[in-house]
Length: 123
Image 1 (tube, rainbow, N blue to C red):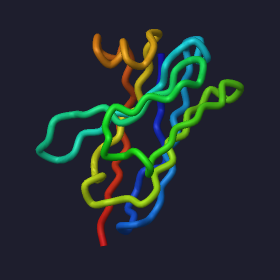
Image 2 (cartoon, helix red, strand yellow):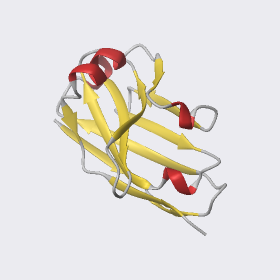
Image 3 (cartoon, rainbow, N blue to C red):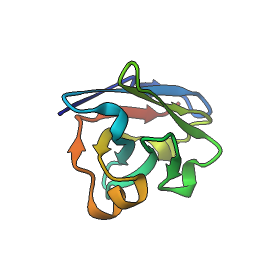
């Protein structure tokens, strides 16, 4: 199983950024795909997840109304669209995958993790 995240970088507060996750080595369409993040000096937290049937689950209220997630099973990719970014969104973002639905996957721990990509929101 491989998960590769793309799209991190430096963005000003209020700006937008799009992260993509490409999966391989597993039946992508059958897996929940999500994003976790870890800010400097803080614990890792779940951000958002999309189930195999397209159901979205927010793991943190702090991104509601600003972040959305979508998936393209034909391309084995998931996209995290981040708008109205704040300095508090600065973190390393990890793409994750699990065969369970998003709620259960977060409870038991995501099975597969990709390498992170850094998002830095700063002026």
